[in-house]
Image (tube, rainbow, N blue to C red):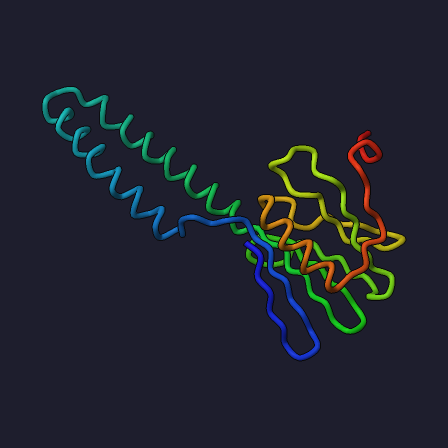
Length: 167
């Protein structure tokens, strides 16, 4: 998902993965699956087949852990902030974990061609000293949307073809 917010002379682009279900919705799915699973486990335990009950609990714990891990991974985001003098890119889950700062006049956009028709181009912001990729988790349409937004703010100084960039 790509969203833009313009406040005075500052432009903020928020880039994050598609998040089809919230954590609350995942909990509802887990509860809906827990009722029949634990109900069957309790019924078997009452009938004398008690080893079924711990396996039902382990199954639900594994499913809950997987749902939590996927939900946490989908909270990753890139926040790209353009001011009059700087370009600041923050990356992280919930709060920024890494930060890149570029001077506006030295910052540029690198566009590397996609390796497969379903993928979008690889985008990165760079200056003479450092570089960071942006939007590498987006689908093709969203990557092209991000490319259009970044082109409005930065010059493209490096555009590579597939053959040049492969190592």
